[in-house]
Length: 279
Image (tube, rainbow, N blue to C red):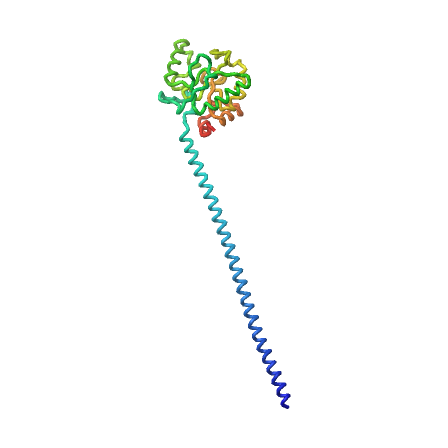
């Protein structure tokens, strides 16, 4: 009988233990389920936060990119304005009966043309210092092509032009107005314009149009930034195949490719090339 009670008691204890164990197991399951749920919620929240942060970052990066672009644009504009402020605005103006260049105007810096390229018995000739490298390249290229050029006239001051025009008027009367500008209207005062000849022609300007070098200039001068100022049929002066003006490579290329002439363009179009005249 005692053994039976002991067995029953043992069973009861076992059942109680199992019940308590199951109770604890249930609690652990609930706690684990709650913890897992919390973790999943926290992960979901963090994921959403990260997504929002990523979107904000993308917006800020876009703003920064736009801001950097604006800064570059402003810097470029400032650079352009600074460059323009340092570039003589007269260099691409239409003179020759259009604009007037006053008696006080002198190019910012003049340089001497290499003596070997100056026509014999002529005094030193000067051009705008920034034009000289382009002129030197053109003269060398012509020489290498067996089409030697000589410079016969370059920069003339207001006073020089006045004296020259006066002498022409004495010799040719009003006919001088067909080929010579009054003082203040001459491209030569800019220091960017030259009259060419050849060793054979000398002062014989009228024969220049038949010289092989004239044809060479028509095909190649633009590469060095030079254009013919007064082609046949122009509205300003008689045809002057010897008279060439530096306008910069970009404008010269445009004029060459489009078969246009400097004085036929609107001044506002010409002015847009001023910033690149020495590039």
